Length: 513
Image (cartoon, rainbow, N blue to C red; front, side, top):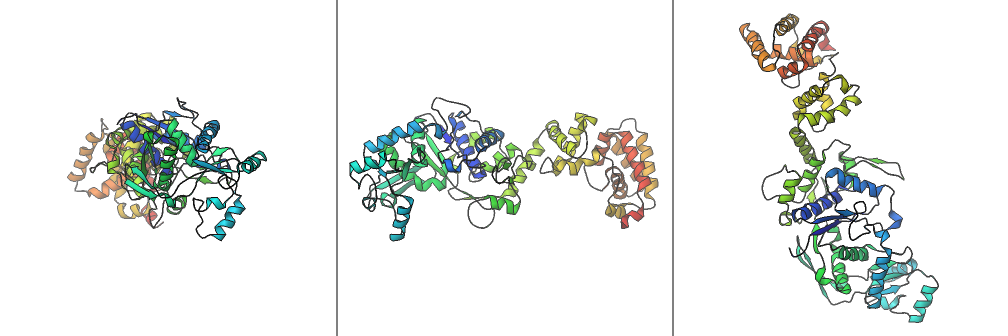
């Protein structure tokens, strides 16, 4: 590449960051890092009516949780700030004046009521070369009248002057060359005097140019505005330094038609925001991936593969591998269906890959929430218990259901298992098992297991009945990890105590309860 790769993610602080926006940020980050470039976070807060308190902090926290590092931004600073558009008013005024002085834009005084009347009068009304002379603007009004209206404080907008009869070419790295007739473009509003702020179209062009953005990677919903942006770059004389475009496909509903929405998540039971969001106006709380128990690595891996593939069958990839393999050549042009169950699979996979000690630390808050003080157990005990059941979980919170018996001895026993595995002969078998276990000087599972297996075989006992009754007394039901791993971790004293307690408590009659 001939120039430094500089990309920007430019969200509006109007609410929580949608998971589709997160994917856009991720693709920007992967591309920038792959090319040794910079990732810019710019806050687009020019729409003062839609500003939501807390949204900007939410955006920063979400990206930080996911490991998407920002090189330049409101918090990080940088050589081309400010990075918040509401703090760049003077810059935008200067560029609005430049367009007006060059005749590339004009001032329009049409009120909302006047525009609505015109739409009622003309089907499919568009403010353009064919209609602008019939409107109230600086192209149709005398110069002294324009000055009088401005001096009188009448509100106005500045519109970009688009001339018909041109083929506007947009070169997109994903979609190739897209050609649009200028005749179908309207004279977009670039600036509003009411709040002294530019619209999206002007602010982004000016900021991308001044911040030396090399690639604009954004959702395909912005593709219709790309021809206008090409014309704006020309109007400013910046065509030679204009960024390259990439318009990413939409994230689609898991079922049916249309793009993914919060309503889909509520309906099907999955989050559509990275972090939990508390709406400051309504008080509503929306679920987040973090609070739902997803690991950031799993979310990143899952999102990366929604609309992109590495060119082979590889699925599990950490951030470094994603950076190394990412390419727009393997991006889809069509929308990617949001297969939320695949997100669960990724989380399950990353939990299995996690070292037991790390998983044990994540387990501690779950223990506390279920009335267990982690300080009553060693870190090794907690870690090993989590490690023995992690193949059965999708989320850290699932550890309690799978491993609770390691921390609380059973007080009740599964009736169905009693009916199937407990007979009149079972209590004596369990007492004998307890005695044999007590005789073992080395309680390591690999040492104890062959002793018990030999006892069962030499006495002609039923393997399933003995081992399931053993499990029932220790665990409370006939499921869980390998029993000799369980007994080794619990230790001889606790294992025998539970066996004998089960013998006293379990009665065949309990099976009918």
